Picture 1 (cartoon, rainbow, N blue to C red):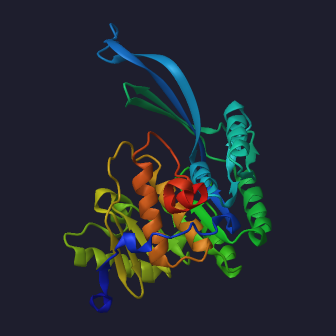
Picture 2 (picture 1 turned 135 degrees about the horizontal axis):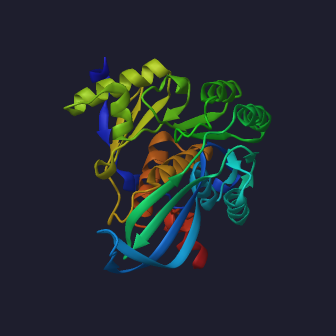
Picture 3 (picture 1 turned 180 degrees about the vertical axis):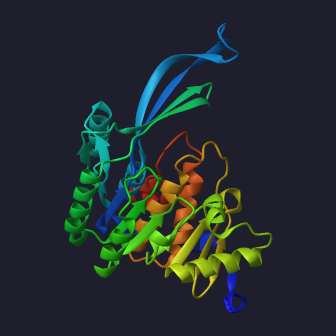
Length: 332
C-alpha cells in the first residue's frame, strides 16, 4: 500500500516567499502544559570543596515562557493573534507568566489552581554551558481542569487554529474531547504529542512527534521503508490528515495520504535544541492558518527550526528573521 505513495525531497528554497504571508490575520489558540523557564547565568572558576562539582557564581537571571507558553510566544512573535489556555499556580511564578504574556501580546486565559505550584524549570548556565536543570511541578486538580474544558468550548468560535501542546504534566487529560470539539467546529488542530499511546489524539489534523516519541508508539525501524510503513499506518489508524516527524539533524518528514515529503535540516550551527519543537509547530500552525499549503508550511517551519537552534534556551523566531525579503522591501 505505502509503496504506491510517492516520496520526494522537498526543495525548501523553492518555497521562499517574495513577501511575508498575512500572519497577523491568523487567530491561534494554544492549549497545554504551561511552564516558567528560569535561567541563572554565572561564572565558573573553581570546583567546590564540598563535592567534585563546579561552583557557579550567579551574575544574571532571566525568565522565559516554557512549555505550551513557549509555543504561544513563538506564534505571537510571528505576528499572529494568539491566546493561551492553561493552568498555573496562584503564586509568584504564575504572576511572572501572566506578566510575560502581556509583554508578548498574548491573550491569557490561564486558570489559577490554589492547590498547586506553577511548573518551573530552573537552568543554571556557566560559561555558556548548562550545568544543571531543576524541575518543580505539580498536577492540576480535577476542578480546575473541568473549568478549563468549559472555557475551551467557549473560546472555540474565536479561533481558527488550535495547537495542543502536551508535555505530559496533566493539563491535557481531556485532549480527546478537545480534539473532537475543535474538529466538529471545523478548526485545524495540531498536536505535539507525548507518552506511549497516541490514541487520545485521534482525529487531529496533524501530529508532530520527534523520533524518540514515535519509536515509543510504533517501535524501532531499520530502513526508511519500514519507517514510512509504520508512520503511514499510524496516521491512518488515528485518522490524521498528516503526521510530521521531526528528525533533528536529519531534518523532517511529512506523511500524508498523497505523498511523503522529506526536508533537510536547515540549521547552520546548532547551539541549543531546547524549544525547537515549539517553534516548528507554532510556525506550521501560523502558516496553515494563513492558507499556506502543507509543503509551504513545512518549508517555512524547517527554516524557523534552523534559526532557533542557533539561539540559547527557549528562544523565538521573528517574522523579519523568517522572511528577510519582506524586511528588505520595507526598508527600501
